[in-house]
Image (cartoon, each protein chain N blue to C red):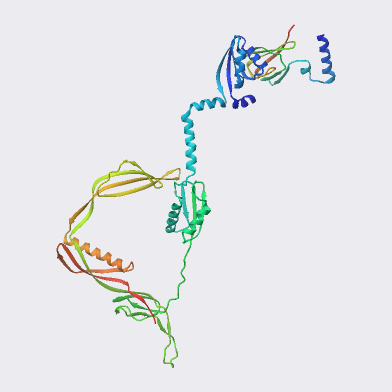
Length: 94
Length: 399
């Protein structure tokens, strides 16, 4: 059932040229250099420290590693991260 | 940040969240619609974040029944500033007072300048202005408009031809033009110059007319010195001469002499200072005089005073406040005797100055001689003889 749902969405992204982040409920990460990272459409904050930020997504986590992190802005599903970003890892829930 | 600036008006606070995974509490806040910014993890179990003042209640509610602890660290924005200010009443009072003072002082006339008129007229204008209520130190609230002032000045001072009144901030600038009354010179009627006194002529300066006397002539009072009747050149055949009549003009300097009697007392009185002095300091604002030191001036029975008035200035501005220093000095009337010689000298000087006063500034005393001196009941009676050089010419109309 879920797979079928996903398939239709994938088809819509491909053929109707709709933005994938909205339809697929995936996080959208916008990065400026290595010091600003704008994360939209996440599903919640898991952990945050000066060196790590871990966010929930639909199918797993996004992990951002770096140094001297500050959350410049925080809304319910948007975060603006400032700091020295070194790595972004996608960790699947499985 | 954009949020931060907007929040300055409504106020914002810095909160500290203490507990395990403090970021999860912050996430809980944001999912409930609370905006947070500048989130920092200070320690493992401590997060600081900024939140708007209106969300504080919500945050407190969310904290309820959780293991987190919340502290409010600092407060920013106008609502808090207001609160702080109301606690500082003297400051607000001072601020209000300074504004009031500024308003009052800027509504005062600080300077009145009058230009383009002689001093006499300037003083008259100033006097009039004072009677209208315009002087350094006066308030501008009750003042008439420059146009009205101009009108009434022109009405009240007939010598003024025109006056411009310009008010620039706290100073009044007046520029006047004096009415010059030029008398048309009447053509002089023909006249002789005759001697006003007896004398020996020393010099003659004749502008118009025919001199009738010579230098070193002795003239009596009434003698015609310069004639206004000039004989016209005529043919020798005709007998009767024709005259042209002019107003004789000129100066005839002659040596004249005077006998003056003077009485000089041997006893002289003069004022002497005892050396007792009292210094008084006052401030004068307009017509108001405030004693500074001493509060109550005792003064002396007989006193002379020296007054020194200084205008206060700040950065070249002349304030309508005057600092007055008055020295009161005790004096006593002293009587002293003088010798006969001294009395004679005093008498001569007195006679000289009296004589010069009656003769006018052009006269010059050449010699002086004591004819007679007698001592009578403590007084010296002097009989003096002066020779003077002066203009003796007097106009006499010709009929």
